[in-house]
Amino acid sequence: MGDYFERIVDVEVGADEAAASAALMVDWMVSRGWLTRESSGAAMYSRQVAEGYVPGADWGQIAHDWGADWVPGPVAVVAGRAAHHPGQGETEPSAAKCPGCGDTAVVIDYPNRWEADPAVWQPFSIAIDTWRQTGDATVTCRTCAAPSQVTAWSFADGFALGALAFDFWGWPPLTESFVAEFATRLGHRIVHHSGKF
Ligand SMILES: [Zn+2]
Image 1: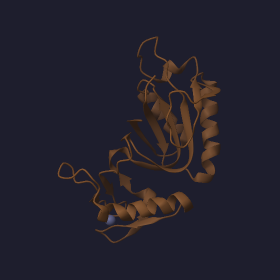
Image 2 (image 1 turned 180 degrees about the vertical axis):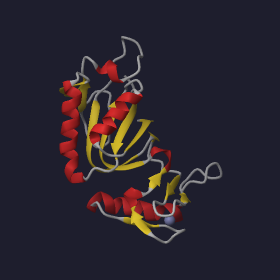
Image 3 (image 1 turned 180 degrees about the horizontal axis):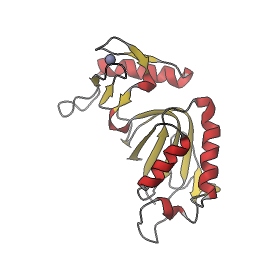
């Protein structure tokens, strides 16, 4: 058990498809014995949901071996548009890359600064709020002056905007082959990160 998580975010699925996609993924993981249909809220701290799926008997097939005594926590399924932060807390990503020109907007100028530059981050922050409500918001690049959907920007540090996420609480590191198969089944680009409550 632990208060850390490993998270896979689908950064392309639409909010209207997220629940159906989540059900298919859970069916698949249950059919393999990696999860059960039983739910629990023990040892998990996802902000958006109170309970997750309890690991199945064969969960060890998809994670590294931390010894026979290890008991991982539930897997929370978060459906709905959300900003997913890696690490601990809700630190902004240190940079965002424009999908048009590829130029990078520096949000936090490490190591000179440890906080987001409000002038740089504010347009993203506003767009993220709008996107969460409507699914549609753009940010205009300071370099090429082109507006792009906020979800099309590439964020540093594993920060992800997505309508579907899976939080594995207290699991040993997931295997690369599992994460790859997971992404293939989702059929979308994923962001994979870890963090701590
Ligand atoms: Zn640009």
